[in-house]
Image (cartoon, helix red, strand yellow):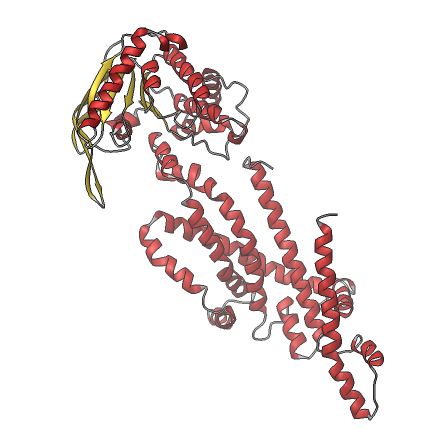
Length: 259
Length: 288
């Protein structure tokens, strides 16, 4: 159960911009094991999103090694290793919810019957049963984001990469969706990479918290959470929770001292 | 009723101004006639005479209406004197040009969005092409196509119409095909979607609102192009030819009736395009 799924060794990524090169990631070493729920937290510019995008082969490292399931990120994509959830739901307005979930399945060439079967299943998984025929504008922001998670789950990737998926939602909706993501994780046993800038969200969700800092983007602390996998919402008032949150805050502050 | 009232008000205003202008412009002829005959006419005698001339400078609305009615319903629609027949000829040319323009506009837009070289080389020429007056270009296209041994005027007319109608389609489609943002493109990349899949699943559907918006402009441009294509060098069919005959033989009523027939045709075409657009929008889940 604890096989390494994502391994980064001495990972560097430099963007060439008009203002000269920008070191987005510097000497990043990280191992993510199967079934981990890993949060990446840090201020903007710390490279958390860049790292997630590198795992998804949306950015290409300029140094070091990065493997996903023992393959290069590009190969892993071809093996349908991961589903990606962006900050905005990004549902196609001209497709129904079911049509949106079917999109990756159409591109990957699943049969029509299997498309329908899978769509039904993931709609159920994110508690949107019965909403398949609605158009995106008929759903709330939280429901749209759930639909986009369903879309990422539809083709049975083992890894779910989420880039601030609830960043644009209000706190009440966010709490509920956090609970649901945990439930989903418990049921499916997927490996999840989760970018956030909310300390409570990171601590509440993760088995491993990666604290990052900017200029150059690097890892300053990796915290293995002692919290159990079963997490009711009120775990956030517990001593351990507050201690971990404190350590994350310390890590973030340390990263800022050399500014 | 609240929507019809403003339209009717404006229409009534136009008709009033039109009548006033008709009296003012046609009165000159009445006064000239009277002078020649050595009589003096009063305004109360002049006004009725400005309404019923055979060759008025500006025909009043009821004369145009009567001529239009006669042209549309006064004979079999297959008659060479029927405006329905001429409108059909123009309509046929418009549709051919419209179709040709859509195909050319969409294909060029696809190429421009796909290849940077096309963007840099073709786009400026497309813009320049629209600065050349079509009236100057139309006779050249007609002469050239007859030089190439093309029979009839259908094809050159369609080319002239397409020349005007491809441009709005091209500009809108370039914008529409580029409408998807980086996030939507990244999402498809995570699915391992190729260029063709990206085009079919994302770029093409995302461009549809832009496409339909351009169609209304394109169909009107196509009609103008067809009429211009019917003007030069001895065309005998189509509303453009009717207008030319009216002006050459000093028959303003024929000219005006053809003009109004063209306006009605344009209105109908835009109405149909609008309906098609609404159907497409409904299919694409746009809230009504």
